[in-house]
Length: 315
Image (cartoon, rainbow, N blue to C red; front, top):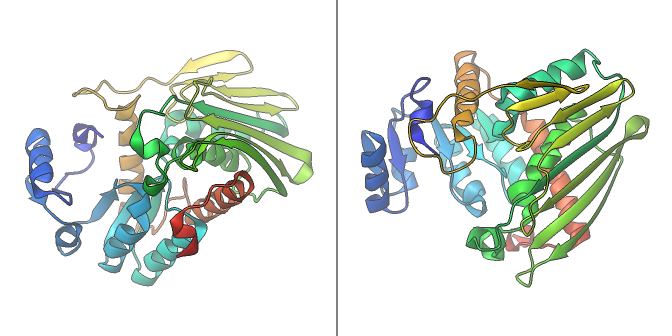
């Protein structure tokens, strides 16, 4: 994450890490005035309005509860947590402490996704019959992608983007059925997964994701009167094709080298959170907590069918 992309909207006041040395180095590089060597110090800082939680997702539940119970608003990186029980714990803590909480599905804040929602509301392609979403990125060399202790696997890291897109198109509706099959690594996490879901009214969704192969990384919405195609990368898109008409939604130019594709688009997510806080909202209408709960329940079912079990599932 490049801190500079947020500066036009919010002020980055402090960075916290388990290592004060690393936090101080990061703060110096990005001009952040304060650094902490523990999350507890940040939770106890009375001057912080909201915390962006970007730790490993195995730690989202523990560290998220720390901040929520300290009365902090929280933007938590995806996946929200390791399973639906942990997500429900986070949502309950936010409600109990009367604070804002959002899963950082940045895709939903991009102009392309806003246009998709507008087109669907206007029934621009008629009745939606089929949604397809693909995300494949070779990541077998990255420890956090393949090690079970780090919450590895294609589903939690990149498959979540495909599934959230389907839920956005179908307006947060629970699928009537889910069928999943996949291939596991020796570490016990999923390498590649294919998911088929059936929704009410004989509507279907198909998702494929992999950390071993590169896929088209696009998404298609097929309706009775046309189609909408989100060109890759579908999780942070800049191009939309509606009935063969292509439209570009260019991103602002970065002020520092990017760690991830189209990272300047993180500013859209930051602005969404800012607007929610200004309006006194406790969750985002673009990524409501109900969607996050359902999304994680679907991922729990996929893991069950594919055979991926994490230690957090028995805790």
